[in-house]
Structure formats: C-alpha cells, structure tokens
Length: 480
Image 1 (cartoon, one colour):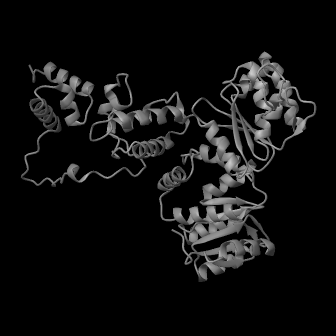
Image 2 (image 1 turned 180 degrees about the vertical axis):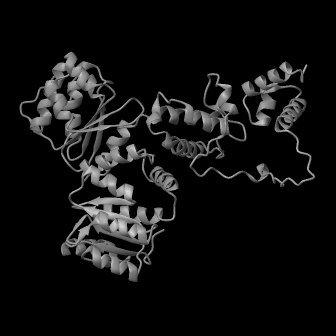
Image 3 (image 1 turned 120 degrees about the vertical axis):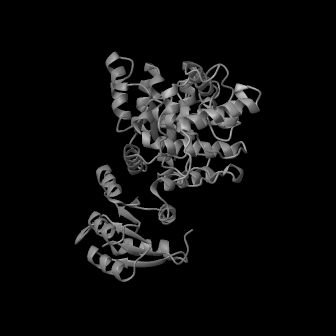
C-alpha cells in the first residue's frame, strides 16, 4: 500500500510539467522531489534514494532511457516511469526491455498519473509474474471488464501500441483468431483513452439479420418502416463521446459497407427515414477473425472501407504463440471461478500443467476460460486432474513426462495434506519408486473393494492412468 512516506522524484526540463506533476502527487500522498535534467536527477537519487522516479523522455543532457539505464545499474529495484509527449511503439518497448515500470503520455490526466504511480509502487515488492496476476486480481475485484492477463513480449508490445493510440480518433482494426480477446482489447483501448468516462457501445455485426443492421447502426425515425412505432437512436449516436466497437466487421453486407464508410468519413449518420444527418463524435474500433485483404481481392469487402478501418491494425497472437502466458491465465481463471462458485482453491496436478503447455488451444483464451470453469465445477479430488477438463483420452506420455515448473504462485496445501519427508540415511533400505507406486495402487484398490473410479480418486490420478498401470502389471506377470 502506498503511503505519504513514499518519495517520488520528478525529472523534467519543463517547469510547467514539474509543477503540474508536483501538484498531482504532493497533496498529502507522497513526498515529492524535482530535478530538471539527468545530471541533477542522478545526484538527487544518490543523496536521497526515492521510491519511484517519473522521468521525461527528452531532456537537454540526455534522454529518459539514458537515465533509466544508469538508475538500473545503481538501484536495480527502483521503479521508473517514463513521461513523454512523443511516444512511439519502438521507444516504449525499448523502455520496457530496459526495465521501465510503465509510461505516461502527455497531456496526462490526474487520475491516470495516480493510478500508474500506485500500481508501480505496489508492484515494486512483487515478481513480474506475480505483478501481472495481482493487477488482474485487482481488476477483477473492481470492474466488470475482463483484464488482459499476460507478460509475454508480443502481448506487451500490442498493449503499448493500443495505449499510445487510445486517445486518438484513428480507427483501430483488431485482428485475431476467435477467442484471442479482441473485445477485451477494445475495452482496454476505451479505458485507456480520454473517452473513458463516455459510453462504450458494442455491436456484433454477425448477430443481426441484414434488415435490422442498418437500423441498429444508424437508428430510425418513427414510421420509417413497419414496426417502427417510435424513433430510435442507432449505435453511433448511443456511443457519442465514447467508443463504438463493431465486432465481426467482415460480416457487414456490401451495400451497407458504403453507408458505413460515409459515416466514418463525414462523422454524421442518416437515420432510416430521417430528413437530416446527425453529427456524431465516436472513436471506432472494429474487430474480425477473417482476412479482410483477401476479402478485398475476392470482391466481398470494399477496398476503401478496408483502408479506412485499417489505420491502426492490431494483430493479436494466438495463445499458442505466447505459451509463457498459459500458466498466468490458467491460475487467474482458477482463482476467478473458485471464488465465483465458492469452491476450495486447489492446485493443478502435474499432468494438467504438462498438458496445458503442450495443448494447441485452438479456441485460445476463451477455450481455456471455459475449460477451467468446467474443471472447477466438476472436480472432486484433492487437486485438478486431466479428466476435469478434457473428455478425450490423453496421451499417456503426458502423464509420464517430467512436471514443468509454472512461474505462478500456487495455492498452499491444506493442513491435512502436508507430509513431512525425512532425508535418507546410509542405513535406509531404498525401495524402487515403481514398487512403491505399485504398492500404493494395490492398497487403494483393496481399500475401495476394487472400485477403480474410487481408487483413482484416492490416488489423485485418472481412471485411464490406473487402467494402464494395471495392464502393465498384468503384462509383466505381477498381477493376475
């Protein structure tokens, strides 16, 4: 938790910016110091180490990146946030690579500055992976929006680009396979923009019949068609001052694409049956899982509309393309649904962790979310096993392979699960592991009157694994 004892150093050659940041941060919350260049900042840090540094990107005697490099040598754990009015994706990614905690765009808003500073100070005591999960947990507790969970470089680069264009009017086209989180990113763009207090309106273009799409987009006047008993605003008008998400934009029919293009260009809509256009101020974000460039070649999507939508393209990676985020997402969904359904928070078994990392996830993040929810509801073992998530038979090689180390904090064992392992001594009779395994299986079968399902639950393995082990023992002549 941040307190008034947290010291923050502002580094900026612009006096107005220093004063503005000082006023935002100093009102009873932080002890604030200020430096006007890199040299002065290094001297102040050496004399009185702050808890956090906010540094401008461009200064007379160096850059914020130069200062960042030197501070990371002097104090590796000191969080640094860059403040800039000239952000580029490459610069932001380079800053993150060098160890910057975050960055703030000028002109900045008071709430955005305080939120970024609070998160940076909170994350100072956490590992990078734990930090990602902690941020997602806070997001889950305070908002209905789904957080973006991940720490991979390709995901972070897209988030930086999305944040850098969030407050612009440039149309954003989010591309990616089903389940990669396109709508989540659209909401992230809205929440990071200066329109965050305005409406966020979403329309699934594939969910409406062609006859209703025009009315839903642009609205209609009373009596415009049969059934139009009252006037109705369309999604563009409802999103005025905010963000409009056009989900599955590729499904808009050709004749409607021309009308949509006109709205994007003129920033005004013609209601169905209306007599005069209505001005709108909307940031449009479109999504699709289809190849629009190929559709242009085929003549099923207008080239001019494609160019108008494709101003800022964001290509979301599949889950298989960011395997390092799989443990983070799995743990996040496990905690989410355990809490939602008031279930005990258990750990994933070794085979589950192995299979999650090896599985291709054709449905991406959405598939994982649905599978983990199912597992939380169905599990009645001491930990989560493969059969809680998958109906299909899993390769036995998954069960026999070494257990991978997931870089997430797993729930602690319950008190009654804890076993104390004594070290071996020279006089110990060491029993082969396979013999111990066989003895445990036989004991479990004896305790359950040869009920394989109950025995497998007692052992914490799948029925298939137990069946294969028994087959192996029969083949070796150990079991009749």
